[in-house]
Length: 145
Image 1 (tube, rainbow, N blue to C red):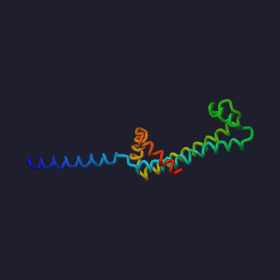
Image 2 (spheres, rainbow, N blue to C red; image 1 turned 30 degrees about the vertical axis):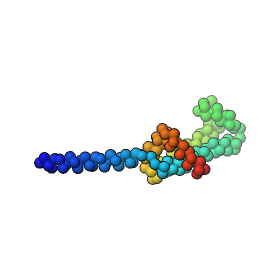
Image 3 (cartoon, rainbow, N blue to C red; image 1 turned 30 degrees about the horizontal axis):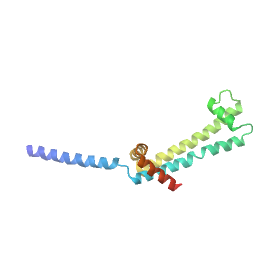
Image 4 (cartoon, helix red, strand yellow; image 1 turned 90 degrees about the vertical axis):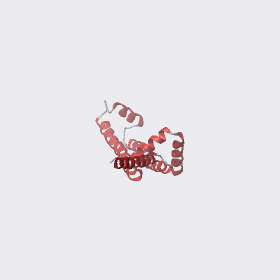
């Protein structure tokens, strides 16, 4: 019985060692992870960078609307706006929200399929905390632009 207990403890120790080694290996952020993260960020930025030009184009096409007035409406959330301004603000905000949601969906889809959500989060945290990883990330972004 002592031998079975000792063998069981030894097996448990080996399994825990293997599990902790695998866990450690999964926690490491590699250059490939940083590159995948950069690709995902580039895709997200591609969508979000189009928001401002889209809004400016809508403002230019709307008779009686200026960029300054639009900013005032955004800050006041449409309070005190004329009916047409309120409707315009609603249309623009729907388009902005649509683009932001698309960017979020792209990040979720790519993160889940390219590297896994946990690895994506770990890589994001590592880039924020480590200057070397952040510079590698920026180098990948710059190279892909």
